[in-house]
Image: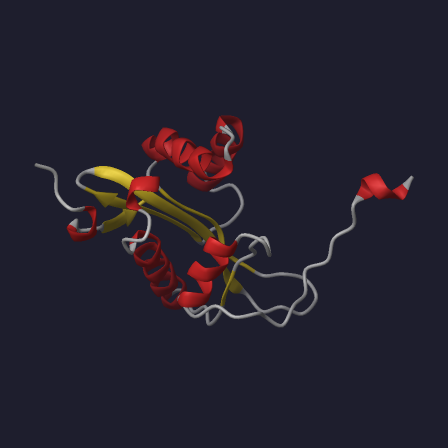
Length: 157
């Protein structure tokens, strides 16, 4: 008899280099596309001190398997923004959705950012990605003071 997924305990630990294949798998479940080269580059930067001295890489485990991941870092942006925590990747295995895995990861990331003296956390979400928007909103995120703008270079002809 298998345990009810809702009752399984979630533990959060530091992300490890050997989590790469599971992160690629979970990301592909959500994006519909395997991106091993992208994730190798992200992990390389992350674990080899590439971009930032304040990375936050977390893994959630349930029953000894990777149930989810979160990657973030402290960033200071242009245009007058103070240093902030930045969540740039979060993913949860399909069988572990809606069981608090992502919320556990986010809570630990926020704790670590706060420990580093950071007062604000930001992320960017596609406006039509309702499940991810709902997740961040249910965890206290609101529209921020900056507006993301973009230019499609293909329209410049």
